[in-house]
Length: 95
Image (cartoon, rainbow, N blue to C red):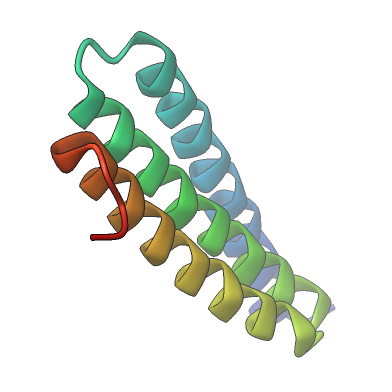
């Protein structure tokens, strides 16, 4: 094992732990959030953290399919956040 690969492993472990901590804190905000806006932001943050976790796993395992999965997660997360925000604001998603 070279020094560069050792540093890469440490960086991936730190990135994974940081994203996992962010995911846990987002779950806490989702449960304790006093307003619906806080809950929407917590869900959006959870999507971003899940996206980061999938990308870190893709880098760690060296498999290309993880990056395609991350694109799908990003698209679904954006659409679901917009739909939920419109539902909260207007009470209807489709006009």
